[in-house]
Length: 291
Ligand code: ADP
Ligand code: MG
Image 1 (cartoon, rainbow, N blue to C red):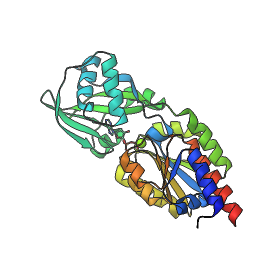
Image 2 (image 1 turned 90 degrees about the vertical axis):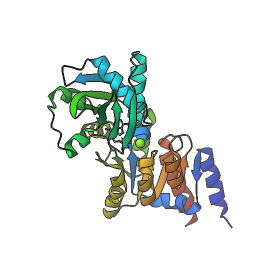
Image 3 (image 1 turned 30 degrees about the horizontal axis):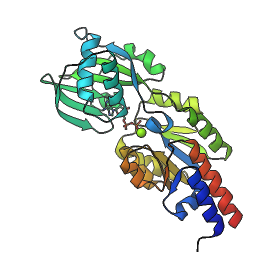
Image 4 (image 1 turned 120 degrees about the horizontal axis):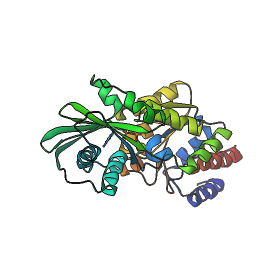
């Protein structure tokens, strides 16, 4: 039989909008030492807008850059892609057509636009492929903590696009509550070092990992475990699923992808990071009473 105190707590959990897959996972929450959060869509809203278009080739005016970028991104579901498409729409820029679209997971997209090979990729992709650029025009937006992606046409880097996302207002409170419970808070992201540092500082995180490729996310969880810590992972994306499974307690954001939700032990129905602190508090209150 389920002890009464557990029944009461799980109904309290339901009141917080927590879907708990099994009782053991809720009990494990009591012993956690660290929580690793995904950045985009979890600690931040995941709603990007293009703030700067930085031409890196004189032949490309801003409108042409945005027109090609939007054609490419209209085939992607990534939050950055949605931001580029929305900004093009706002500016009334349209007309290019992309075909043969391919995702480069965790790094960008590739397609044929107006018959030319076109890519939008992360700074990490440029480095990995030894594509050298003069970074000085981009330094200012990077220092401001913005996400930067590059537009390449036929191998030529024609522009940088800077995008800004907003840190969820609930994230700061969630991190503070967790730290008060003695839990280390960390962040895992595929985004660049500078953006990650800015968010980590804003939220006073204990640690972060940036430019992590999707297949490396689970490795980072293993690394945290090797520090002797019991760790939970909180995420929303397809990319986060292996890390959710690898962690001692996988927590998915309710507004996230089906794959993340299926891989999690607990689902936050309200998509509010403060509910992570509620899980810890409820689990401790419940199981400490029983011993
Ligand atoms: P996160 O871990 O923050 O959710 P992802 O792993 O989804 O990030 O993506 C990592 C990086 O790959 C992004 O910051 C971006 O630079 C690049 N990227 C991925 N998909 C796209 C896309 N559709 N358009 C532009 N850049 C992309
Ligand atoms: Mg994400």
